[in-house]
Structures are given as C-alpha cells and as structure tokens.
Image (cartoon, rainbow, N blue to C red; front, side, top):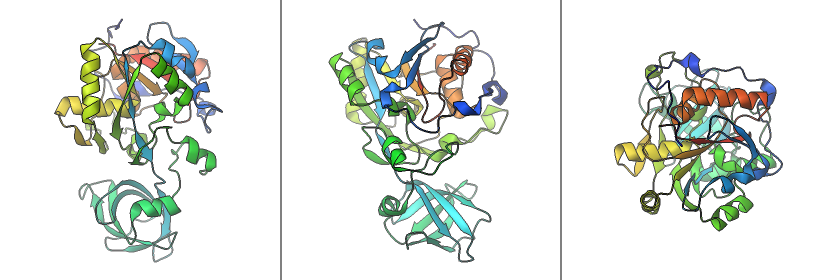
Length: 350
C-alpha cells in the first residue's frame, strides 16, 4: 500500500534535511560479509529491523530489480606543480584524446597551460574549466592513456568521511560484485550489500534483474549550501538505459510486477530516461519532495548525509515525515551510516 504523504504541498528548505548524527555511526569499514548488513524495512508506518539477506523474501516473484552496473575506477591521482606544490586529482570522466575532467585539490589553482608532474611519471596539462568557464571541475590532457594511468597509479576514491587510506579491503569491497562498466568516482553503495547468495535467492524466487549504467561522480557527496533548494546547481553524470532493460521494465509493468531500484543512482537514471525520453546522455536531475516518479515502485538505499541531495531524493520517494522518522529510528537503533553502512527498503508514497 502506498501511503500518501500529508506534507506533499509543503515547500522544503535545506534545514529540513539536517539531523544530528553521532559520528561513531559513520561506518569506516564494510560489514564482515556483504549481506550481513542490517536492512531497515521502512515500507509501512512501523519500521522493522531485518538483515539484508532477508530481502528476497520481502519481494515478489515477477518483480524486477534494477542495478547500476558502473565500476569504480581508481580515480584519485597525486602530483605536483612545477613550483613543487602538491595536488590531488579526482577523475570524474574520461574524454577522447587522453583528456579528463577532474576535481582538483590544491592550495593555489594553477593557471591554464601549466603542466603538472604526476606520481607515476606521466604529466597532465591544464586546459581550462568544465563544463564551462564557471565550472567547478577542470579539464586536463594526460600524456598517457588515462584509464591505464588510473589502474597503475590511482587510488580507490573513498568518500571524504572515510578516514583511512585505501587498502586491499577497499579495492575489493568498494565495488559491487557485478561491476562491469568502468567510469565511476564513487560506488553505487546500495548494491554493495548484494553477494552471490542473495542474487541466487532472488533468482530462485522468480525475481528478475536488469542493469542501467550511471557513472557516479564525486559530486554525489557535495553538500547543498543554498537554503533555497531551487538555487542548488546539480552535478552532471553520464547514464545509459539499455534497450533490454527498457523492454524488461515494460514487460514487468504490463504483468503487474514492481520495479525495485537498487540505489539512488538507479532512480536518477530511470527517472532521467522517463522524463526526457533519452536512453543515454548527461543528467543533472535534482529530485526533491513533490517530484513525480514514473518508473520505480520500491527503493533499496543506504543512509545518507544530512543536507545532501540524496536525503532529498529519498524524502521525495517515500515521504518527508516518514523518512525523517525512519532516520530517527535508525540512529536510536545504532544503524551504520553512509557508503559502508546498512540499508533500508522504501516504498513509493504517491
């Protein structure tokens, strides 16, 4: 049953999405086993505490799970300016001709044309800002093939709130078991809970799977700074909804099955496609309460940062008051938060 949100007409501001999170609830490492994470079943007014591997039993034969099959690349690279000043690049996307788009962490931004010496013996020439002169990101040209340089010299781009350097554990676990298309600077974290056992149980129950691709950008962690949400400038991410997935969605809906989106990135992809009719391209979709969802019926998602665009998305999907209540419950019950944390299952409210 879809509960109707009583606050559908309310205009939300940034402060509505703030909450007090005890820092020790921010997961610094993954659960010992992917599917051993907790799952907060938030489909009804009364939340139910479960374990993630129970998910197949909560879905119905004929439902379709849609995953984001993006693969996290070792997008964090280090280098220095000719003056010796250290810098860090976080690659958002690779363009043709050895060019990349990246976030740059450096004390003083280098001028256009400067050649940076990168750790690993290659260089990166600064070409300008991206996507335009006002852009937050930078366009650079590498002296070598970028994917190869990331694989050889890059580091796993762990989120800013994870306080340790990347280890072999992170290489294995900050990646889904079905990651296929390289290009993400952040993992589609709701999908990190799925292991071979859960996937086999879903299949045995007659629940189908389909993939979309959205190369998650580091901008996914950008806090919203404007109290008026309409002023927030959303980051751009590349997505694709393959023809086979479009067909599986149409077939599932025709037979009365439900579309279960795994993660906010999957929802962003499906709704971008539904809204524009474009099966692939760049999206800057910003989903806030009042948004009319067209594709997903259920959502599997992790617990998100206060004041983040992801908090707004899940509130739009399952109802603001309902979601804030679930977060209060999760904090009281000591759920683990963010990328390496626990998951929740939500039903669309309208």
